[in-house]
Image 1 (cartoon, one colour):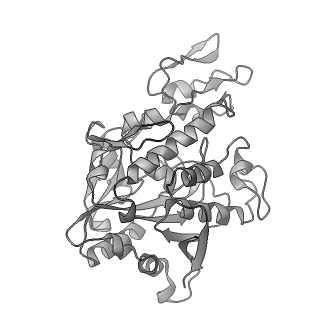
Image 2: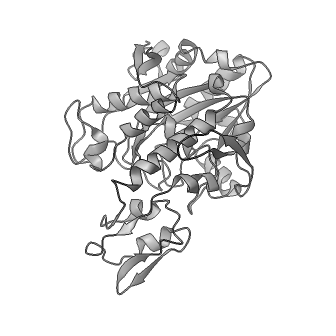
Length: 369
């Protein structure tokens, strides 16, 4: 049976049609109130954005979800987990500072902020899932302990997973650094003839696993944790992975972590995907590239697979922008994520998630005004 996914476009000609009003309407249309029990604590899973990034979800939009949860008697907090790589969110102090700098202060969002895995990523819970790659996964403690959760995801591209949406937000976003590392089974490799020895990769490596030898970067595989920061930052695209063998396993491991993030509260989780500022990269990078397609709208569903499938299709239905990171597949209906990175297979997330029972790829798109 097709799962319901509610959609609001961004057109507005009167106050009743503005984006803030539409977010509140989506919350009600998707019956998110059913996951809120008065007095229970609800986690709002959000990505606060790396310092230098500005394409994360607008805090004013997040405030509308906060107010709706309060309206139905819920207590709540905004949360994310610490990162595996160096940056402005590697521990709770820097992470909270970055969140506040990006507008997620209590005065704006109306909710306290908690970093779900604690100061250094040690607040964790083991969740039994009995899937192909993992018998158990490690989830950030405050997320695992929350009674219900609303997952707010900025839908965009990703250099390895193809796209980042609700599934990836659950998987990487709900895992502490040790859980993220277990998902990152792939290891990058240097394409020697393309490397010019600029050392950009060395500067971002969180484990000092890269060095220059005879003017070329060399990765020590035993020290590498597979965070892919080097691959993202390389200006020459001289770093790659084994797409045929490593990446399918990485995607499946990631999806299994998403399954673990909702295990035990499958009927108490709701999802919103924001199809705005659809950039080539995750909000984990310290920049925001130009959008590859026009802003589309906002989706809401109780099914993470259905909402990602609908988001994927809506992005691909657009005419791609020229003079952006989108190199090919500009026409309507073409895979924009492969148009940026031909080796990626974003839809694999959706198919495997459906296979393990995380949700359904079949959806009914219901537009609200």
